[in-house]
Image 1 (tube, rainbow, N blue to C red):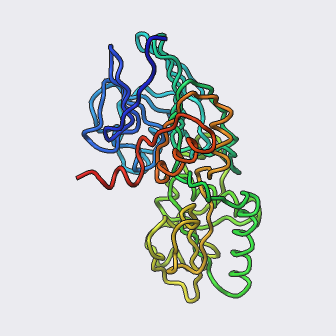
Image 2 (tube, one colour):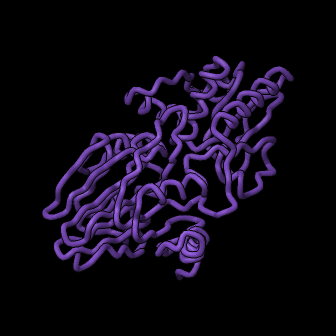
Image 3 (cartoon, rainbow, N blue to C red):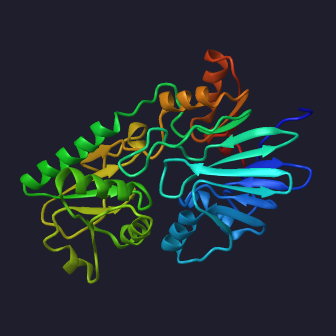
Length: 336
């Protein structure tokens, strides 16, 4: 091959071909391209829907975007897995295990070879999502959100059991447990754990309910009760409540309440405003990410996310891989 993929960060993962510019997961209005790929529906990944250019995402991603923001999208919607062609570029979409509709992108070009962009990646799967496939490639752009070499998460089974124990103990002691989780993905996982481990049908915040309806449409079995106005009346008699993720506990009219935050960031930051912090993440931590990198067989690895610099340095030093941080917290902090 006369050349290879050379992704660059321009407020998106930018891939420049002779015939078109491909922009993956733009973070703002200046991160566009001729072809815009949107990996999933979390708020920090959906700016591309407001840009010009041809947009590609999964059907579920577009529906979750509408459930959150009330906006329809103009895009080439795909069921997972799927394949498309744009001139000489072949594009494959596969599940990423992160949230409903989250996609990995594999791009093949006859002059550049194969590149895989994992997007936010959960290698091990969850109570809702099966483990995603490993996409072999020449060049890999990999999620490094939790890519610090010292970061480990407890097993999902352990965390599910911890959620169930904490909720059961709170209820037994006369408290109303409130679990705060990202309204897209994590809240649905929490609802599923309450359904399966405790047989509970939790009351859920309207934001969580709207997203959960999309999960139901796509065949995910969830049992929940949507909170309806007036809110104070709706919360009376609540046994367990699932609320959106906030920096501090939601103010709710419960006589006795215990608040938990459910996020992978509980393994990094303190959440002292909450009674319990549970490090359940939609991302994989370092060991699982390394196993994916090894299986993908890439010659060059670009890391992307909070611990991009640390992960790239470890891959160069320990694995002797050609590795480079595409964008991480330090690189973004240097931007004006």
